[in-house]
Image (cartoon, rainbow, N blue to C red):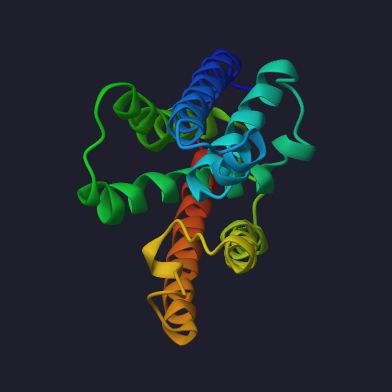
Length: 209
């Protein structure tokens, strides 16, 4: 077990909780000023893949900081592979597809950078320091369950409130056929990313301690 994994996990968990709390506070200030209730604000907060994934990886790091020797539950290698693939996916997709569409300022910029850049980098470092050598290609397929589950979750939610956070899965502007094509492409990219990380994990397993 790398001696640096635990402090990196602790730091990452603290920054992760900070980013999540700051984003909630900003959303609360904005929506409550428009008359939204606590329930409505919380419901909206948990629609974003970015925030759900940040919550996921922050909990993974918090548990690793608490139980650094544990390799099960949230810290099972396949779960950590799912987490690192997901958070790097957040970072890459946001910066390539979504960041050009808006320019946050002030505290929103801080929250934006924290959840889309800082947490992904810290989690990638944490994952690099974790034990490697047990993953198989089936674990890469397991990792793809996270975006698939989110797609079902996001589209189902939208049937009730007509809010779709991402333009590439918005049936009010796209056909379901186009959405399906978009999601297949994204999941394929996710799988490729998971397989690349699997290859890195196998390479790391062969390094000398």
